[in-house]
Length: 454
Image (cartoon, rainbow, N blue to C red):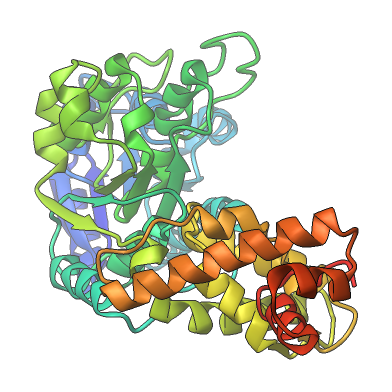
């Protein structure tokens, strides 16, 4: 159901037109003059405005100009008498969707309303698709570990409302995927999902990215631009790395959360946007609040429902599933017949600490598929350094036996690599120094991924 604002000072005409719109399934708000019409527009979200050209207080042209300043996506239809056709044509050039000559034929009016609403939908959808195209990547939540399942369960429980959510976790853990999950399970799933990385945009440009700007607001602002909050109207906005946002801008985000209104850079009028906010950070916001680098009031507004995303090293059981997924993705994308990962390569990946988490693993598999000339990814394709494996910190979930085994393996790896360097790669001599058989050394060299150059 669309909400239409009808501004008409002829009460009888207004009732007739409103009745036809309501029969068609629209909700109609009536106003008898331009000032009252603009007041209604600012108080309640409307999808379309139908206004007479000649009105008390403010004219239809003034209404058009004000609406286009505040929300250019709301189409405006002008009704005009025969003597003011030239003015109506001028109004169309200034942004009116169309004009209707009085006396207005209700059927023609409904047809024009339908076209205007469809055009608005297509324009909005196009803007959203452009944003999503810039952010798109084949990825989804993969894994069956207990910690991941618990985080997903929390996300599903909070999705149904409008509660502000903050996702906390290290870089690369998949916070945006969790934000998308919440959006897709929410009543706003048919609206836009707009993501922006606050740390990736220069601080002096971030305000314009979030709230848009007017033409001439700053050097290079050749035209009005809608910000992410406007594009996310009736949908969800995801502010990643919000802990990197500077204090002044934090205050403006807080005002949007409290009042659903903001001003474009260089603007003079308030813009309304009905947006659900999901934020994410890898920073310690409590510490930032204590050092006054993050606003306490914004922190408390964001921290209504925190969800902690576990790092990959705490859910190692998910690594084989993630490897299988990314292997399929990049084999298709790069058009290569790479079908599997060798046990040695997988064992190497299972031992790594993955400080970059799922994103690092994803990049590792992409590189491996590029380097692999056969059907199976081997340790030499991964580009993983042995020191990186050895420096891994044990997980809190590991038992003493597992930690001891990993430490022994790391020590053996380091010693074998050192002896091979000293012997110039002569494995027979290395086996003698290490006091093991040649066959045992070959097995360990292969198992530990030390035959990369062989």
